Image (cartoon, rainbow, N blue to C red; front, side):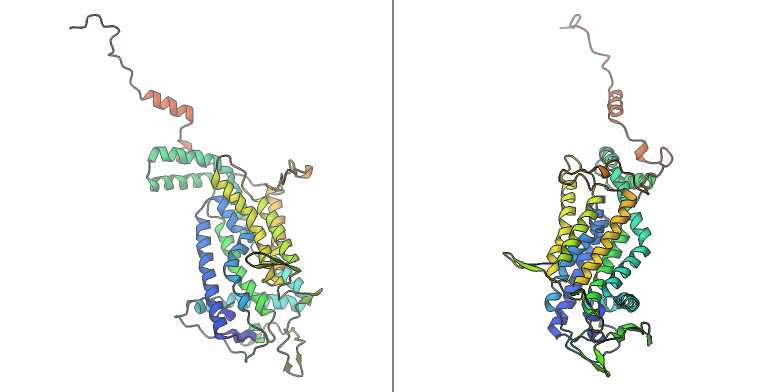
Length: 424
C-alpha cells in the first residue's frame, strides 16, 4: 500500500499522474482515520457492537469509505518508470508518511503471495493458501475473541441487574460505577475488550491485501518488491511478459487470469441501473456477502425484549454483510477470494466453538440438525472469585431490598388510641 500511496509508486511499475496520487493519498489517509475511530468506538461499546466490529463484513463496510474512491482513479499499468528504491516520505505529508511506515507489511504480504504463486502456479490457490496461513497464525486470538463475546452475552442479564443496583447505590458517581463494574468483570473472569486485538489485526491487514491484489498483481515488473537488502527472496517467478529482456508493459508479470476470471480486476456479471449509481453485480461479491451473513448470524446476540439498542445492533449485523455486494463493481475479484476464504475459515471455527449459535430459526426455518446441537469445544463460564470481593456478591435481590427498606421504617409508638383525655 505504501508504494501506491507515496511517491514510490515506481517500485511496482506504476507512475500515475500527480492528481491521482494526491487523491489516493488523502483517500487512504481519511480511510485510516475512519477505521481507527471505528475500532476505538468498538472496543469501548457493548459486546454486540464488538462482534459487529470483528466481522469481516463490517471491515468491508468500513473499507468502502475510502476504497470506493481509489479505483475510480486507478493508475494504468501501462505507464512506466525505472524501479527506484524506497525513500522516506516527507513528514509534512501525513498520508505519505503513513504509507511509508506500512511498506514492510505490504512487501511481506506480497512476498508471501508471490512465493505461494511460484510454488502452485495458480494465483487463486495462492491467495487462498495465504489467507489460510494468516488465519492459522491468528487462530488463538480469534478463538479468544469468540469465547469472550459469548461469555459477555451470557452475563448480560446479570450485568443489567448489577447496573441498576450500582446506579441506585452510587447515584451519578460514574467512577464508582465503573470501578464496581470492572470488579464484576474480574470476578467473573471475562474482559470486555478481549475481542479488540483480532478486530484491529483484521482491519490492519485488509488494506495491504487490497493494494497487493489490486496493484501488486497487475505490475509488469515486481522485481523490486521481491528483494530485501538486495537479495531476491522469490527467484522462481518467471514473467511471461519478458521476452529477450524486453518487458511488455501492457501485461502483468503474474498471470492473474484463472478460468477466464482476472482476479486483479473487478469482475462484473451484469449492471443494474439505480437512481444514484449503477450497481455492478459480481458472483464472487454475492457469495462473499452470503458467507459473511452466516458468520455474523452465528455470533449474533440473543434477542432482548424492550431493548432498542440490541435490536438495532442485530439489524446492523444483518445488513452489513450484504454491503459487500455493492463493492463488486469496483473491487478486484482477488479481494473477494480473500473474503470468501476467511469467511469459510471463521464459520468452521465458530461452529466448533458455538455450534450453530443464533443462526436458526431463519425466516421461520428451524431444521432438526440445528436443534440441541453440542459444539465440539463449548464455551464455559469461569468460576466465580471469592465471595464478597465485589458488588456482584453484595447486591440485594428485589425481596431483600423491600425487607431492608421496611427495616429502616421506625414504628410510631406515641400515637394515641383515642381522643379521650385530650385537654381542650
